[in-house]
Image (tube, rainbow, N blue to C red; front, side):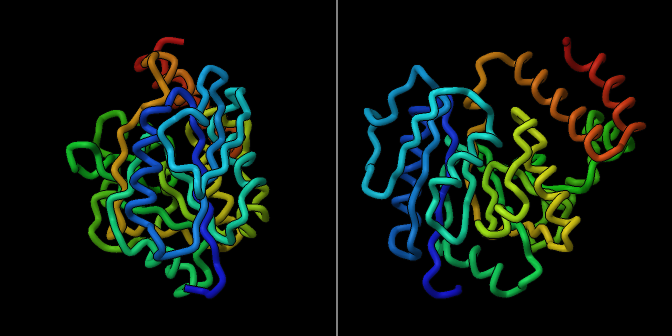
Length: 265
């Protein structure tokens, strides 16, 4: 890994105090002194006092935003407080499983064309988590995905490193200067598809998106939502924004059709 580099782990928290405690504990345990690191927590929840959480604050900055602006906008705010040359965006309901953290960062040194690195996401049952990496979405995929025969499954199930079109924001690595070059996440996405959009803009600049399954993160999933229908609404709202933004108008029509069958507005 390049010398004199520091990693900033940016976590956006909403309704996630207990999960956040476990997440940060796993960071201290698994990263240790292998790299120079810090944690930046953006608190989007006005009802939670994270300063009173059971957290070792030695390497933690808490940004009390107290306004739920969504994941992407929260990350953008957190990055403005980050001192690291490398960034890891990590969900508060995720725990680090693997050691040898510096191996992920070395991927950026091994290939200067790499813009984003994603890792293996495991469920609490230690199963490979679906939709953690994949191919660009199309109208064809909208049908296949809802029939659970996604072509992206070959990527998230792979045991070897693969170049792909997108990786999930659950655990996403990127250099800070490149993230700033991209002007961060598009905060028009409240939740969902902001990671796919970031990856698409990365590829548009000629950079690669790499999936690295050897490094593992355990993800609880859905920790910020109590309302399943609201979660689905945000998902389909963001999907439609993504398709419209990138001029996939036929896919947008298909998405709206599929939405009528799978979620109430």
